[in-house]
Every structure is written in C-alpha cells, then in structure tokens.
Length: 250
Image 1 (cartoon, rainbow, N blue to C red):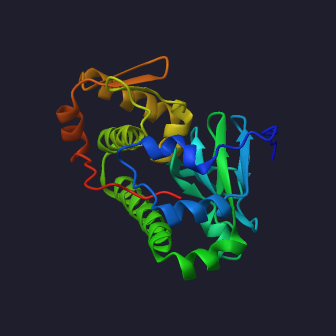
Image 2: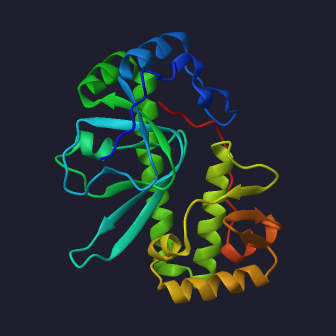
C-alpha cells in the first residue's frame, strides 16, 4: 500500500471538518476525549491505492476523513463485483478487525485521507463508551442495509431502474457527506465502475445511461453529475431515498 507521509500534520479530532456536517451526530465531551486517544494515525493515500486486500488480516479500522473509496470482491478469473462505496464519515476495515480476514478489498477512487484506529482499543471503547459502541453497531447495520438494497437491485430491478437507484443512492450519500453543491457533484468513478457495481457489461451500462439521460431527470458531463428532476429520477428508480435522522461516525 503506497502511503503518503502526513509530515506530522494530523487533523485534531476537535477540529475535524466532519463535525460541522448537520447530518452527523456530534460527540459529547467525554466521547471526544476518548476518540482523540483512539485515533493513532492519519493516512494520506493517492487514488488507486489498495487500502485493504481480500483474504488479509487487519489490525486497524479506518474512517474516511475525505475522498472516495470502494469495496469489492474479485473472483479467481479476475472478474470484479463492486459491493459499495465509502464516502467521508464512513468506516472501513471493521470486518477485517473483528473476523479472521477481510472478505473483500477496498481501493481509493480519489486522493483520500483516512483516520486510523487500532483494533486493540475496541474492547475499551465497547466497555467504557456504550454510546460509541452503539455507533459502531449502527454503522455495521447500515452497511448491511446498503448491501440488502444492492442485492434487491441486482435481483429484481431492471437495468434502467437499478442504474437510476444506484445514482440516486450515491447522490443522497454524497449530500449526507456534504460534498454536493447546487444539486451537482463531481462523481469520481467511471462507467466501468458502474458496470462492475450493477452487474452489467460496459456496453449495456452505456446504453442504459443513455436511456436515463434521455429522461432529462439527470445530466452527467465530464463526471459532473446533476440531478435535474429528483421526483422523475426517484420514479424511474422505483422509490426515493430519504434520511430521517442524524447518523453517527467515529
């Protein structure tokens, strides 16, 4: 894993930019004090870095401070299935910290900064800070929920519906992470990433995107994605995606 030196410049937890997001639950004073000791490092990674590798045991878990990453599994013949994407405030590596080994890999899509937390301090967190323990449990349950929705898309939504749902899903999560401006975002992934997420060929993905663009619900030019008519996009996807509460992060 190629790691860029922080040069000693580690973002203090009390100045964490994620704490300013209205969609995220803030820490109590005691929780913040503990999280400051829980965080042991900060990794500055270029795009295309493999953070975690399938089959690998891991001693750390990470919170995305900035940037995008994606989780995926690779078959023996090299075929790839993207499982989900990680955005700011998302946690990665929990599986490899609590189980024998990682069942999937994680790569960065953009230059990414990760906060590093050691597996060895998880017991202290769970025993002394039940509120933070609940937050980690919530994050794990949310990941399960996202995988459930992805499975529904692959199994029951048609190509146009699953493409619309995925783009709406990523747009809403980007809003939650505070990286959407004027209903637009610079998506960092390619059509190949989408194809590997949707379980479709690149040609099929391209044709399906053209059908979606023809609906005038969205525009996507030079990776700049804009939701023009959210109601129309939700109608194509089969449902809208609404966040109802502030979500935790570590």
